[in-house]
Amino acid sequence: MLVQFPLWMGAAALLAGGMPARICKVIARWNMYGISGLLITGVTLAVLMIPRVLDQALLHPKMELAKLTALVLAGMALRLSWRPAGLILQFFFLGNMLPMMGVVGWLYTESPLRLCNAYLLDDQIQLGNWLIGLAAVIAIVWLSWITWRITYQETRQTSHREM
Image 1 (cartoon, rainbow, N blue to C red):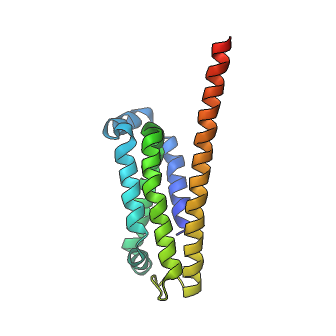
Image 2: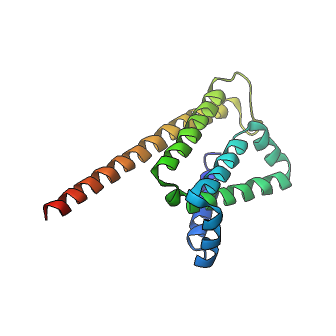
């Protein structure tokens, strides 16, 4: 989950960056303010965090293909939606996804039972700790970036007014 999801979504985001402008315009009409793409990404990640889905993907090649296809579409949707979404929708998206990621991590950590056959109990606890830590790191990085961006813009506007 911590390796495959980011790699597939990252590769898809890079792929989406090279899409022709004509296709991007068609998608932009459907993806007003990035809402549709963020919704697709959020639902995809929520479903794929369910342990039963991860187990099914390991057992059935068609499920694995569906999972990988969903990750690619989610990565492309995230890339095409992030900027149009603006800060408020980005905050709303992360404000929903990161706590969900933390809760899933907590469940993996605190459950005395194996939730997913793909992980041994020790691996499950380690995965849970990584999910919680990753959610915290993403939140800190995003908030730091926003703080820098706002501070930079204010500094830039102040310097332009003084000229």
